[in-house]
Structures are given as structure tokens and as C-alpha cells.
Image (tube, rainbow, N blue to C red; front, side):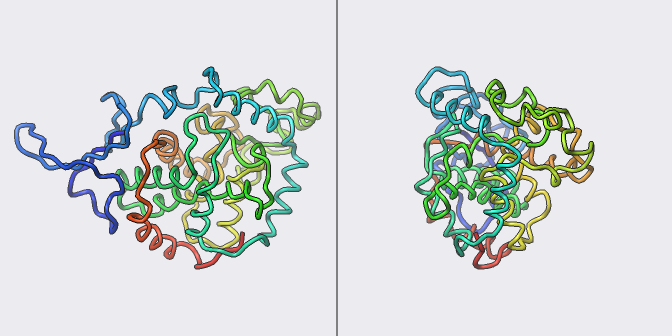
Length: 324
């Protein structure tokens, strides 16, 4: 990943985490810029107007979100989706939301939760097998370079995957298929844009005459907040943030709950369930998604260097301790 920003844009309190070179670029006249190198070889054609560069390949040398590549990682990923698609039903999701919505498993700060993720690796991710705290900081730092004044978006990137603590014993030690992977609505038909759609054939809900229709138990335009999503880290962190009275804007909560909802924000499926607020919030999710997906790298962020900045944002938008 290569990120270029003008010197005047590096405005946040903490120093950029992976600055490795400062040089003069001559184009008619000398101009100073920072060059941030995350370790990817990036073609010029994918450099955005903001400066963030989306690489063509992931840390394993494959295209991003390639679920057909032949390697051991892909076998792990496909097995996870087989379990997820056959086991996640509307009844299952209702039970998990009721149980984990109690938020009675721990009391800790956002940063404490970030550090817990040092031991978590996401088996559904074909693009990276690094500890999750690195993914959080990589995406947050990339956004911070392009959107220096949207501090709520920096913090949203930091917290968006914190729900993966559900994999840890103290939070139930849930299986990976109940924590990670692309998300999808329950109570209506499984759209074919879902990854490994074939495995839904064994899901009991696919045989329900109501759940297998386009709208299912919902009304068109009901709003995604009324829709039951497959259970996992997205919905859990959404509940944690909402119930602990975060002051983050609605777009932040939308990103947290739906950032893994690729059938919607990549393929345009299930749009008939959206309302006007969803249509506004998804604009920010589309911005966020590039950084969530393409900032994944084997080059680690210096946690100590950026910690003070993110702690200041946590204090701004969250209580000191949260119920989990």
C-alpha cells in the first residue's frame, strides 16, 4: 500500500504510524510530501483522488476477496461459510441477540478491548491472517490520512471489528461461523450474491414458505434497523455501542453493523429493505469499505505511537467503561 498526502494535511496530534520516507518531488517546482509505504506494490491507476492507494493483491498474492483461489487458507474460509450458511437461522439469531444483548460478560474500556484482540485471527478473511488489532489500526490510519477532519470515522475504523472478542473464552468462545464472515438478513430469501450461496440449501429457513420469499417477514422500505442480520461481531459491537450510549453519528453505527454486509454494499442486494436514512448512511459505508478491505498489510502499525490519539477519540465518543 502506498499513501501520499500533502505535508499540510498531516494535522492530527499523533505522528503517522508508518511514515518511512520524506522527500521533495519536482513537478515544475519543488513540493514536499510524505510517502507512506505499507508494503504493497500499487499500480498508479488505483490511486484515489484523496491519495489512498488500493492494491491489486492481498498479503497472500491473490486478488482481494477471492474465494476461489486454491490454497489452504481458502479451504478454511470455505469450511467456515459452509457451517455459517447451514446453521445461522432466524431463531438462532433471535436467541443470540437476546443472550448477548444483556451485556453482562465484562466491563472494560474500548482500548482494553482492542488489546484483547491481539490473540484473534479471522478465519473467514482470505486476505490476511494477522492479529485483529493490526487490521483495526491499519484501516483507521489509512482513513486518517485521507479524511483528517472526520475523527468519528477514524474511531469507527478502530472499533468496527471489536465484536470479534466473541471468539474468546470469557465471551462465550463462539465458533468462527457465529462471529466472522459476510453477513446477510434472516427471515427473507438468501440472495444469490452471498458468498458460497450453495450451502444455504441445507439451511432450515430456506424451506420455510415465508422466509424463502423476497420480503419474508419484512415490509419493503422498513429500514435495515428492523432487519435481523446473521449473528456475529458486527451486530454484537453495534449493540455494545448503542446500549452504552455512544455519541458517534448514525453513519458510524451503520458502518459497524453492516460493514460485512457485502451482498448489499458490493452487489446491491436487499436494497428494497432500506429506508431514506439507510440511503444516506450507506454513502459513508462505501467510503469506509475501501480502507477496511485494502489497507490489510503484513507491515505493522506502531501501536504505542498512535495510542494517545485514539484514546482521545474514545474519551470523546464513549464512556470510560462499557458493558460488554
